[in-house]
Amino acid sequence: MSLYAQLQQRAAQGKPVRVGLIGAGKFGSMYLAQIPRTPGVHLAGIADLSPAHARANLTRVGWAPERTQVSSLDSALKEGTTHVGDDWRALVRHPAIDVIVECTGHPIAAVDHCLEAFAQHKHVVNVTVEADAFCGPLLAREAEKAGVVYSLAFGDQPALICDLVDWARTCGFPVVAAGRGHKWLPHYSESTPDTVWNHWGLTQEQAARGGLNPKMFNSFLDGSKPSIESTAVANATGLGVPSNGLLFPPASVEDIPFVTRPRSVGGVLERKGMVEVISSLEADGRAIPYDIRMGVWVTVEAETEYIRNCFEEYKAHTDPSGRYFTLYKRWHLIGLEVGMSVASVALRGEPTGVATGWFSDVVATAKRDLQPGEVLDGEGGYTVWGKLQPAAKSAAMGGLPLGLAHNVKLLRPVRKGQCLTWADVAMDTSSRAYTVRRQMEQMFAPAPAR
Image (cartoon, rainbow, N blue to C red; front, top):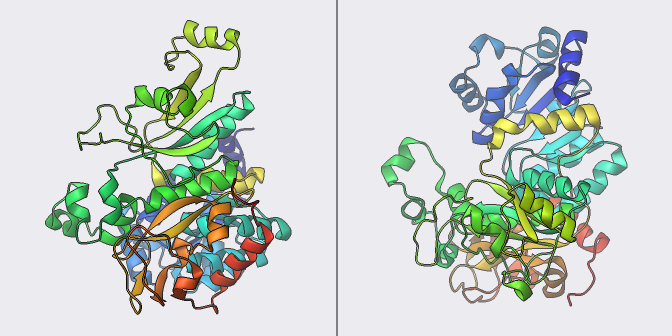
């Protein structure tokens, strides 16, 4: 039975999937916009640091105010309405909630939210992929131990890429490469919140009018977010990662099967079976027509002459050899698609992407020469950006994960372009996120890099 049919059935039975949302910002608001149009789902509660801001977003996406004027979570569950408050623990601990959607974008807080949800036997759809990037394998293991499902969020690129990879493998195709698109030039890695809007193509006035967060948008631009999302994909699918960070090769949609081949046959990959990100800009800054900037893709291989002939007969666009073919989705709809994950974990007990091991990491890397005493400001800030690294390489160097490189003081100088290590910083070792990360390193210790 399809997910939609199962949701309709739950609606007819009066037994909706009961959801709790933590964080009602931009991503959460997009999910909120779809919930009234989805049968068999009841958003029972929202926990946000600013309930007033959450209610304003609910109004913005079209919710009637009376739906959220509820005194308690118990009342909301009884009346089919939605309680809005600031107590995430009360939301997670309520026995009637089936699924928690973690949507804060704050990786350290997200770890606490996920672990508490598992302790309360709740499924989790984790939108905060930054948390998954530095400890996803352990979160997945803890969910399994608790008998619940932990999942990446459909609509965000990692889950969509995992879906394409699963399609390919289930059909019998070897996956040569998979990834997303991005607007990228090498100097973007130095971008700060002060320079982001010019690179992004917006004025300061336009950004202010839209209430856009420069640090968040800069995390996309400087390469941190593509590295984070590629790490989530690698850890979920077992695909390899480049030995010294993403290459961001420029390509149109039509050129992806040419570019995402091994170097031995004219492509850019070190070997088959890798994650990569395609740039929508040529090296000189020219925009590439028909780009994949907002989309995802997977490149597969036809291993036999018969399959190559099938590609030809059905006009599949391949590389010149006819051996490599790319399937793609040119757009992702972000929070508007999260309902797929909610339904999948609640009705099928299946994640839409989940870490299966520690194969990749995102290491904090200096944007400029840094001096002792400086305080790192994390993802999208002025001091560091996130560089994709094989987990074995990160483990060998003691790489400082980007997700924990916020509000941390430097102990010694670090050169521009250098990856930071645990030894470079005065780390707060009291946080649960730090403990979980260290446990993950021990539990999923990768084999030494070759």
